[in-house]
Length: 156
Image (cartoon, rainbow, N blue to C red; front, side, top):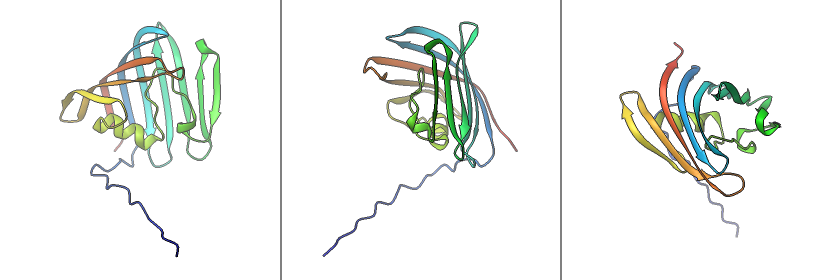
């Protein structure tokens, strides 16, 4: 006799917006590679899985992540000589940022404060205003990221 079990995912009480979201965060980082602060600019389109993320600090672009679900994603980190492509976000190491598996997971983290190692430090009517993430880098060393929302726009 063959028994089959199906796991039903929990219902998402906050629907993911279908329209593009533009967001800007101030960030702070502390880890084995040092410390830093700067700006994170995001364009997220949940329907297509499109993501453009630019991390700026020290007067330069530290990270550029762009792509979509259909064509895959490209991560460039010039200081670390990283230029990688992958079919999904989950396959890319995201230096300075919490690891996310999809654009939808990134939106959930930013809109609800959900995700492994993520905590909400301050909320307002629009959702988490200040987020903190604590985790491990690819070498297993402790690192932390603080995000402070400066702008959040959902296209009409």
